[in-house]
Image (cartoon, rainbow, N blue to C red; front, side):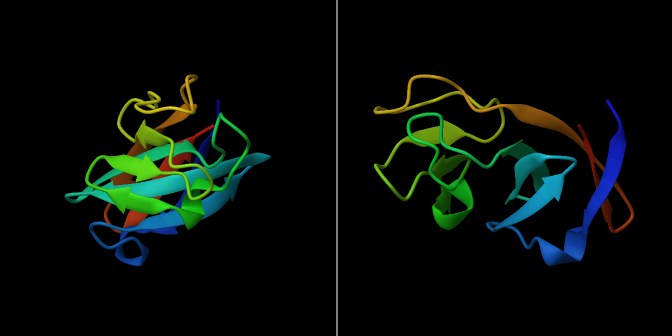
Length: 101
């Protein structure tokens, strides 16, 4: 895996998300209480774009059918999704956000 600078921390206020492309991966950065998490930006139920859904605390809700995923672990929390989304390691140095992918 390689480390990629993907955003500035100031671009992702608490309670918001930001979609980035890392190599060929669609990644959703999520700021939960000042901590940044990174998950695959594709619902495992039908490929919906999670960046168009809502971030509710530590969960992101798919806009298509309401499946929810824990942004900390990638776990699918509600149907219709049963498979987790991929997660990525995140590090922050100053205002720079890095993702390992």
